[in-house]
Every structure is written in C-alpha cells, then in structure tokens.
Length: 193
Image 1 (cartoon, one colour):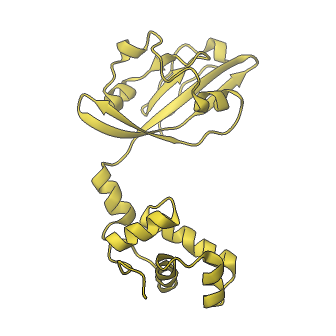
Image 2: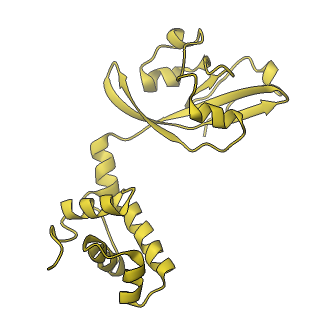
Image 3: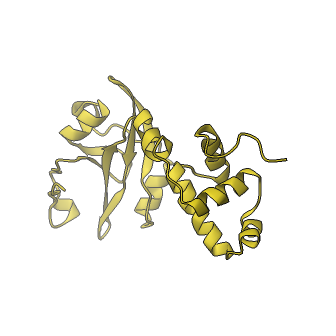
C-alpha cells in the first residue's frame, strides 16, 4: 500500500502524496488536494477541482458525520466520466488536531458491472447443501424462525446461513437473494403448491 505523506500537524500539511487515488477536503466541504491518480480514476482534471470546487452538497451527511467523529462506511458512487459511466468507492478518513479538521477520501475503482455480477452471483455461486435447503424455504416465503423449527436448528444458525447466502449471491436482502437465485436457476421460479 502506498504511503501517504502528511505533516506532523494538520495546519502544517501542505502536500498530499499517494500512489492511490485520494483527495482532501476542507471543513467547508471544498477540495483542497486532488492527486494525479484521482484525476485518472475520475476523469476530473486537477485544475478543475484544486481551486476548491464543491465535492458534495453543503448538507452532506457523510462529511457531517466524519467531522463529528463518527465512523463512516465506504460509499459507492456512480459518475459520468469522459470515458463513460464509472462506479467508484470512496472511503472517508478524518484527521484532527485541536480545532483543525481535514478529511481524506481514498477513491477506488469498482470492477465493471458485468465482472461484479460474475464475481458475486454469476456462474460461480456455490452454496452448501444446508444453504441451498434454507434458500429453497426462503423462496417459499418461510420466515427464519419457521425455518429453524422445520430444520431443528437455532434461529441464530439459520440467520447465519441467510447472511452467508446473501453474501454469496451479492444480495442486500432476502427478497433480492431469492430473485437472484431464481435468475440463476438455484431455486424454482414459483413456490411449490
């Protein structure tokens, strides 16, 4: 991982260097640093944003939470670049020194959508026999508590299997997992009568 060069105190930070795409914002949400890799990933020229162009709207909840000291999850953004639409993931790192606050945003390119689908739910979806059994019951509309009773498992175990199924299929909900499983022919299209 490339090193990030920063000064000993925030006020003394004058240069942001990294081999990874990263930008820094001021407390007003405007960009103060934008490196070459950021320019390559986003297609947005450094001279366009280095003068303090807005990075997001003034009420950005991510920036507000970061400045208040809360941990902030990575955010997926879809942007139009000169090379066409691109998906990126932006992380948020808050640096504080007394009253001074600086926020670093490493930027990572996401794989193209087709590759992500193949990785997360494509041909390679591999479920254990127990996960396949639980997925089939989910497709019939059976709730976790009822699945646990039918299979003589604890509800916690069933929920752990459901989480693993969601991860394997790249789904965010049980409904989405069932829809993807039907698309992949892992379960029948219609519930059993």
